[in-house]
Image 1 (cartoon, rainbow, N blue to C red):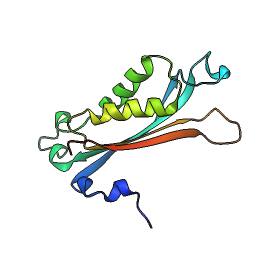
Image 2: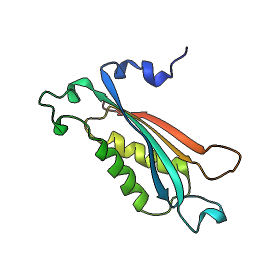
Image 3: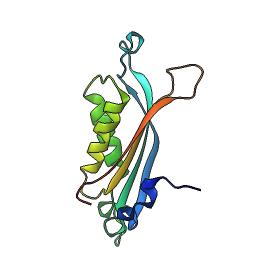
Amino acid sequence: MNLPAMLVDPRLADCRRLFLHGYELPVRIGVHDFEQGAPQRMRFHVDLWVPLAHSTPRADAIAEVVDYDFVRMRIRERVERGHVQLQETLADDILRAMLAHPGVRAARVATEKPDVYPDCEAVGVEVFGINPAA
């Protein structure tokens, strides 16, 4: 079995992976005329690689880890800024927000629109990045 390169990158060997999958929001997105009038249902899947040194709680307190609410808030904030044409743009913006967190070494962001075509489950995009300071 071939693992994606992101999973065997030595810069991630001392990390745990946190994830928020299936977060669903109505989003004003799209380039087609039929996409301009109303928000579309979108799903977001985010994986974060956080160094164990910054994510191993000693006092069992939320302040010792990267909080899932951080992920949800950054996605919601970006969506609330208004219409975006492309999923690529939205995914890139969310990736930058995830990598801006001082505790995040790497992130994967996937977006999907499940209602675009009746003959497929979803259309989407995925992007991965490692914090340049890692």
